[in-house]
Amino acid sequence: MVADRFDRLTWRDTYEQAAGVRELVGELGARHAGAEDLLRDVFLAAYQARVRMREPTAEPSAPSWPAHHEFVAALLESPDFADLRRDTVGDPYAAALALLAQGPALRGLLEREEREEREEREGRGSAGEGDRQAAAAVGTPGTPGTPGTPAAPGVAATPAVRTVARSAAAQGARVVRREAALMRAWGVESAELERLPFERRARLAERLRGGRLAEWAELIGRFREMAAGERARKVENATGELVGVTLGDDLSRVVPSELSGLGVPALRAVFAARYAAGELMLYDSRGERPTGRGAVIACVDTSHSMYEAGPGGVTREAWAKACALALLDQARAGGRDFVGILFSAADKVRVHRFPADRAADLDATLDFAETFLGGGTSYQAPLDAAREVLEAEFDDTARARGDIVLLTDDDCGVTEEWTRGWNAAKRRLDFRVFGVAVGAPRAAEADSVLDALCDNLRCVEDFTDVHAAADLFRVI
Image 1 (cartoon, rainbow, N blue to C red):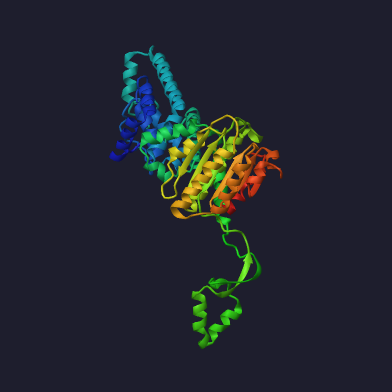
Image 2 (image 1 turned 90 degrees about the vertical axis):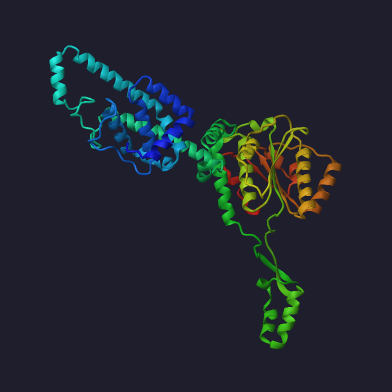
């Protein structure tokens, strides 16, 4: 590969930072001549924006150079490698990931090459010294390292080399695509990734791949996409059905008789005075209640039963956590604080805060998503924690109208005294409670405690369906 000083520096920096690359280079370089050159070229083929191979007259740097040239040329011709480059060009981390994914194919290529060279040497062992010198003087075509060996990009790869190149490209593309999808599912943008130091990004990828919800990254991604689509459709303060006339200063709803006064010069001052006092006659309407302005709080049940799987093998916990992460996006899009409350038994409650005025920390998001408490279920403890959050917000900023979403698979009792205090706080703070009975139809029945606590309640039984909660994202 043609490489300038910046390409060589990028390779050297990647080699020093990526332990996996160093190990691969060390392993193959100790056994095969020119292995490091081949690995560097495969890395640059994925990394460079403009890929160029050396001209036919370029002097081979090792006896194996023509065979490696043949492999890289076949690699660049592979459709899978072209697809892979969409995610790796200009990104040394992704190019290194692709190189490591192609490691087994490269190892097999070098071993086959070494085996063929050994067989060729053994086959030539019976030839006389004079014959070998004559062949070297003529430059027998096809013999690695001799002057007559073509080393141009146009050299046709053998079927075996093309097969290895296609296999390597396909494996690299799969690994790179899978990691890119994983990052997108967790809301990590490509621009944010490129700003991360190499080691930090590697640790993040390892954590995402090995985390509790790594298997359900696709579900999390679909939830977030669905929520984004519902946000785009949401209409706040809809006009709705006309139900009468009221007083106010909303010029978009002024009745025609008020506007007619503007045509009489003597009445314009009267109109202005009534407008300033908020006493214009307006059409009154009944529409959707405006969305909340206080914090969005997701109370997620993490009792033992939430680990139960439903259709498609998706657990109740995975569906509830994916919904909660989409609510985090919803809150941030609306400039609202988000609080995730994980609960099980009365003494097991964890509160995770994500203020609107700070960027969401990915490590904190993963802590929230991966924590599982186990045990039984208690409503009072998490709802008390949610109420305290809304009370503190109201006392500090006078913001009311928060939204609480309770995701659970159980229905448990609450005391009468607690219920009175809860209802009083609800009237004072004007918050709404949405309930989701995750795989628990009985919890969503009309006479259940969950139904009594919630203004809006629905049951979800198909855990592969992200649209079962779509209406939440139109009203929150």
